[in-house]
Amino acid sequence: MISSFSFGQMVIGADKYTADLIILPDLTILPNWRRKEGHVLEMADLKSVLPFKPDLIIAGTGVNDRMKIAPGLAKELSSMGIELKALATGSAVEMFNTTIVQTPDKQVSACFHLTC
View (cartoon, rainbow, N blue to C red):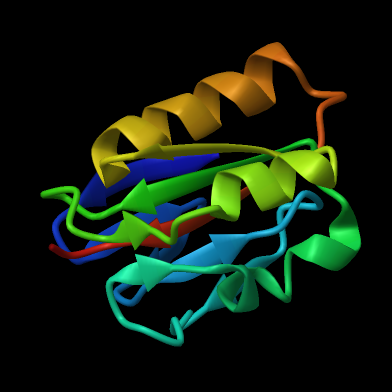
């Protein structure tokens, strides 16, 4: 569960992260996540998530919602049985925490852009 989030910083348990990150369905954290194109989320950016076959990927698009979703990404993920929800990072954190508590059997992954 994510304990707190503020611009450029996320706390998960006792650990503080100051760079973008991915949370896998087994709650493993992959720090220092980089995207092929900085403010665009595309399929290649999810290569570490896809082998886990999540039911849902929650994308935190930044405090000011600046990271965009590549055209066709949601449709391509949907064809693989994966739902994509993209929200400003604060809202994405709330959705992630709520989802993992309310539907513990659901395979959920998340990727978070922590700044803009």
